[in-house]
Length: 110
Image (cartoon, rainbow, N blue to C red; front, side, top):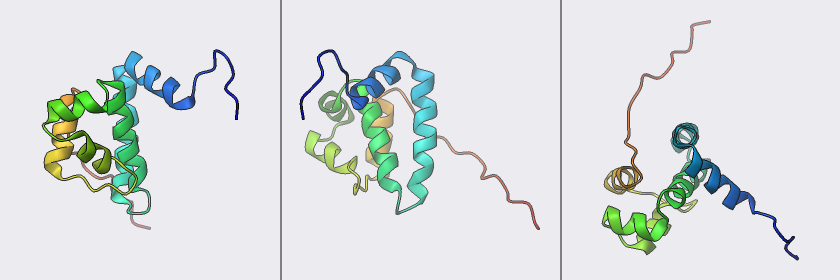
């Protein structure tokens, strides 16, 4: 497959967009984190967190600042990753975000 001169990959464009708009990055992660509840879709949330980490420092820098090895970060944020709460919180803190909790919307009785 040949590359088109001046073309940008989808991933590179996504990272640039997240870097340019922190609020977009927050909303992007909020939506992606909802998938963590579903074991069949958990990888999407982890890959989204990985993309945000790439946008806000790069994986090597984020790993170093979070106090974990780069290999551990790659493994934790892979589609089959299973990061500990400690790792998740360290990554979020490093990229300037934090975990929060909100009420689950109730489903009305039929």
